[in-house]
Length: 293
Image 1: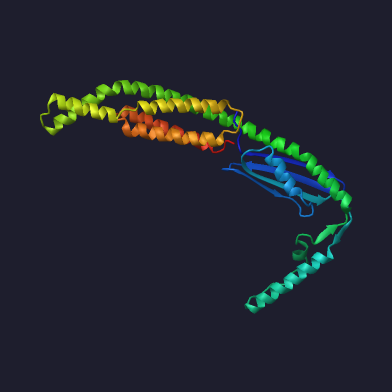
Image 2 (image 1 turned 90 degrees about the horizontal axis):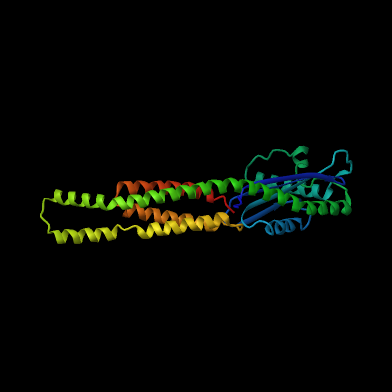
């Protein structure tokens, strides 16, 4: 069964003085790209998160975010004086630069200062932070499993769409084979009509030779055979339990190449129409394949 690269999962809870909420999102990507946004004071957590996700996810763009706040009723909040000094020093420096450039620098208010990261802190102690770290680490397998379940649910929908596309391609190939059988009579009729329009007499042997040359140039047997082989490969990928997105994307390129050649060599309105239907179907399938892991 196919797995989608798109999914979302979320968890929340509380430990000690902290309320926490984490979210994990996934979208399609050519490779595996994992980004983790966690509070700076949880040292090393971002690396642990990326390794945990990479162990379970093969492909996609993953974004993990952890938000931590002080539980309601906790009163240990206090101003970080060192951080405040840095904020005020930076503000004064910016004001001087602006003045040198002839720019007006609006006064900074208390609300501007308090919105700066780290201005307010609370004395929770290393033990509480360690407990928070342990809780987040313990919940990582759960949120990753939720994401995978979300991706697999969407993968089932993608599987159904692509399987229907394979069935439709098989139908079009059957129509193409029928059109090829009728194409010989149509080809000879069109060729003789073109000779008549030239108003020239051509020896029967020369006429047969030219028809044979054109017949060879317009032979699409190899293209049909390769399309049949590609369909078998597509069914194998649909039945696979391994990530198949890259292989499926390459297979869609091969489908498109054979359909283009079929149209260019058809010399038949009915066969060309079938080839164009194939191209439309292939484009529709390829759009869905972009989301397969």
